[in-house]
Image 1: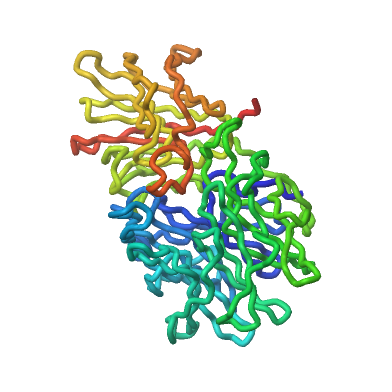
Image 2: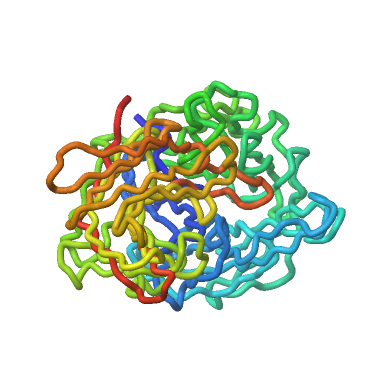
Length: 537
């Protein structure tokens, strides 16, 4: 069985491709480094992370990129023995400068291509394709001609900023666009037309796009034409998949889909979705990836199994499912020389300036860098939150000498939304542990003034999350019992829905380890293991 989401935690904008018996899904990583996640499966039910291909300075440098920007909407395709991966690098999201949503809307993004003979790499350095919009997609036609699609961004005042889907020929051998771009589809009344993918079947070109915005009104729209440049007719049955109006569905925000044909000839759609906190409209895990079968109607349009466009929590896989699902509970002891696969860091292509696993074997050493609000050089190593309820723990060895030095355990959405339990220093208290929070909706939330002095030696810190409730605790070697901070923190503030919605809120919550030294001394902190334990409450 396929149990959704198949990629839990922040994994948006899926692109899916089959090569022989192997299925691959590529997803967006935004400001997290290395860039783009590629997962592999043979049964469509169990997926394993196999690579993040954008990992060299010559491929990607996101220092200075604002929250919610960076790598958007990769598209993974395969032709002539080569994988092609196109994606957007968003440098500025921006707000409209005048007149609200109808005003001047300046954004900066560039679309790139990398290639490899295997998803494990090595992947090439990027080739710049264009900068006219975001969400690029490659389509390889039966005659050998390839095309690039992307949404067209129209920054002009009093225009629809989502200016339609453009198509332009692409020369595989020369790795460049040729001819002129042409608008092939303007979208429907749902608006926000983006995320294009194209396929050819039974003499038709089928275009699927994301519409309605990547929130509660999100949807997958289909259109078709006998000619690649159109005109395209929109599916008369409405969106082929959506959560719109289905408030009780376990999968909300469904949209941004891509299609794949299984080995038995059946079809499936991979799409993004969100799981709100119980009783709340907040998705702390951000946008995740779901997968379910589709079927072709007699009139040549595509539909879900129930014919109503409903996202499914559970569905039948066309492949034999023979591998047990992996547990979300993970203990890492940092005994290897490389960072465990589930961890990422922010923006920088120079991880040696942020952390090491070799200076003190068995420990992850973080060098004190800039603040948690920095968009440039943060020493923060974290993994995705994948469950509503979990415990995360780490043991910290750290001797701060002044109040500008801190290190600890952080539950982090972005530079403006996090809860942090850290060891730091105060002239009157000495070395101690305290809480720091940065949240967008702080009304009614008091800052916890309690500072707990520490005895010499290591400190174990725990973050316990139960749906919207987060509590931090700590203990030292001479005490088996946790000392809990009295303040219950609000996890819903670490979500796509918290804060100003005219800024990008497209990622998801991470939990991990951080170290700051804004004095500039670079004082390091050593972390002896990290545990993530999913809880079933």
